[in-house]
Image (cartoon, rainbow, N blue to C red; front, side, top):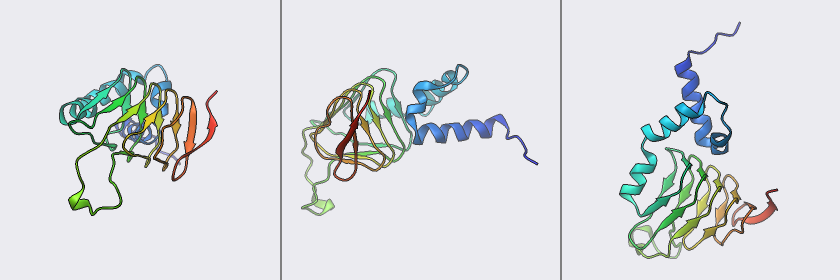
Length: 164
C-alpha cells in the first residue's frame, strides 16, 4: 500500500527535480510557477551571485542553488534571458599547466546567450560564448564557442545536433 507524501516533502522533491532538470522550470503547470519563482528568490542565488561576482543575469532565469558560477573583476559572466543552469554545473576557468595554488587571476569572461540550458555537471571554460537557444548536455566540458540553437555533448563538447 502506498502512502501519499505530505505537500512539504513533495515540494522538496520538486525543488531537487528543478535543480537537476532546469528546463522543467519553464514548463511548470499552472499552480507551480508561483512557488518555484518564490523559491528562486528565497534562496537568493541570483541576488548573491550579482553581489559576490561580476555576473549579469537576464530575465526569467533559473539557477540551481547547487550550481557553481565564478567571475571576478575583469572576468564578467553574462547570462541571457530565460537560461537554466543545473545543479553542479561549474562555470570557471582553471588552466591545467599550473598548480591551483598559483593560478593567475586573468580571463576574458564567459557569455551565455538567451534561452540556454546548461546541464548538470557541465563545465564552461574562459573566453567561451554560448549562443542563444543552445543546449549544453549534462557533463559536457565546453572549451569553444557554441553556435545558436546547437546541442553540444561530451568532453570536449562538440555539436551533436540542433534545436528545432
